[in-house]
Image 1 (tube, rainbow, N blue to C red):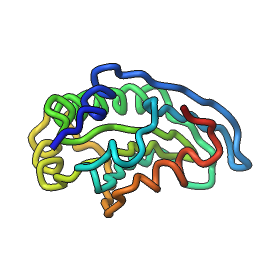
Image 2 (image 1 turned 180 degrees about the vertical axis):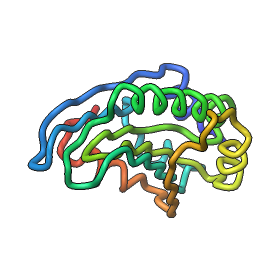
Image 3 (image 1 turned 90 degrees about the horizontal axis):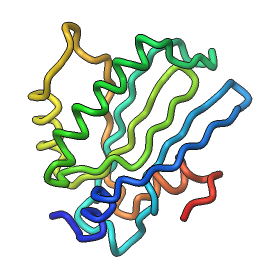
Image 4 (image 1 turned 30 degrees about the vertical axis):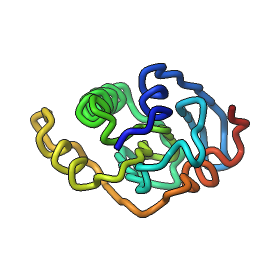
Length: 152
């Protein structure tokens, strides 16, 4: 069930980008704004983390142009599949230390899995690692991903 605030967030599609350096290496963070909080996130109580590892951990590596292009293609395809009816909402994308992570919120993990399986793929399957957990207050987004970023 899409809340009006989530639908408005999707419709406005405003993003903020932050670049910086951590002790391991550079990072790029994009997140949707404004960052929603309860009660506007009701109906999106599970965080779905999708990780695409493209280099070894602890190398500080950023993606090469080919990997970056494939990741953009994946993001566009999956967002089109889940955001058309607000089944899930992409809230942040973090590229850091050999991996890109997309942070989605949903309450229909099964539908997200089906749409991921049914969306167009390249010749090779996308090298994705998926995890999900309950996070009805979007604490992972605010306390892990955005903890050092001033948000609206």
